[in-house]
Amino acid sequence: MRYRDYGFDAQRLHKRQALIDEETAPYPHRWQRPLPIERVLDYEGSEETVRVGGRIWARRRMGGVTFIDLRDHSGQVQLYLARDHIPAALWQQLSHVDQGDLLGAEGTVFRTQRGELSVRVETWTLLAKSVVPLPIGKEDETRTYYRVSDVETRYRERHLRWLVDATDRERIRQRSRIVSALRRHLEQDEFLEVDTPAISTAYGGDLAQPFSTEIRALDRQNGYLRISPELHLKRYIIAGFERVYTICANFRNEGVDQTHNPEFTMLEWYESYSDYGDQMQRFETLVADICMDVLATTTVEYQGQILDFSAPWRRLSMLDALRQYAEVDADGRTAEELRRELVERNIECSSDISWGEAVAALFDAVCQNQLIQPTIVYDHPRETSPLSKEHRSDTRLNERFEVFVCGIELGNAYSELNDPVEQLHRFVAQERDYPFDAGFVRALGCGMPPTGGVGLGIDRLVMLLTNAAAIRDVIAFPMVKPL
Image 1 (spheres, helix red, strand yellow):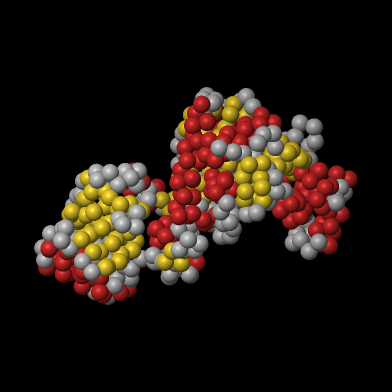
Image 2 (cartoon, one colour):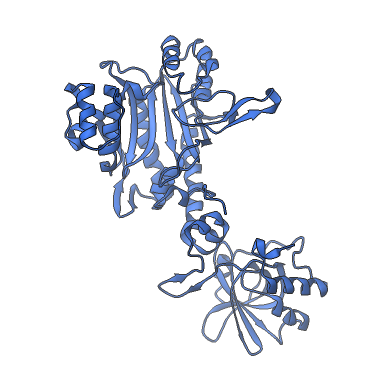
């Protein structure tokens, strides 16, 4: 077996075998739960007996004393192992211990002559022998030097990055706090968390390329990973659950870039007896509350920009955005005039582009990146929103809004279309692009009350609140190229 193909180090493997030959288990079944190191650091050298466990971050030998820096999830403490203070067999076994090994130790807390709080070890146990060298680098007061420089490796072997990068590790903790806070606030507002299928025989809820497979249990019928939970969440609304939400992974077989990953996490909620105006207020209030819960402020720095998430946020219609940022008054222009405008700006477009498609293309290419502070852009062209109600005063538009921060789309919302006949006509018109969910149309035919629906990108929200430059910095295991 070629151990080196898995990164195993020959010298470490030799030490592992030596421990086994000495009848010392390098991977014991159990060890009594230790005290978090951060609590040990509060002892102030009180000569208390403690049990600590963690990873060896550094080791130094000075004559008959070995110093080990032991680190766990909460902090780091120095272990003081004196040859005349521990059993001879354990002292000899220290030669089989390497940086990166997991170690448990028992001893008393004291301060060294230099005043450093330490644990005077009386006995220790190897908890796991590391046979793959870890990229633990040197540290000083101003910099930390790591041995992993290849970016793709740092994302492919994410456990290594979490081990050595405190900022990345904290983002994972912040992500958990953000998701918990979202759940807490929605449940306080009487929303019910529900499930939707991750794989089904029809897909919808957005215009996106799905991951497809076949379902053997259904005579190899085509199956699709979820691109959106929308059509199943609306079934809950139809059934009388008036406020529902889900936090789930969605899958789109598309590109990878700063804000996109083929697998991503969304929060979607639907509220009966509301429209997109109501959801604008709920969206901005929810995010502002999350900022206060997690960061204790609504002022956030993101990539050099100071953002203010306090409600209310700026509101801007898409047509007004074109006037302000593209200097184009699309209201009085024909589709052909807007197409020529796109061509002059070197924006790709088809020869038969519609008025609404041209408006959306101009906004995407010219306006979006200029929206830095949290901004609600509302009233989108009808062609871009097949599941949204027609605008009540302008038939060219639908009642839809998106939220943008630093040019990043954070959320998308509608006054949901609840006319089953109109929905069927729209689906049929788009059937050339993808097969629609006929079961949803039948469900909608049973009657759905006026409803506002919202999708909020969890990964992008975490990006903004943790100052992460790219979405793969906040996704635990992002898509990377294979080795």
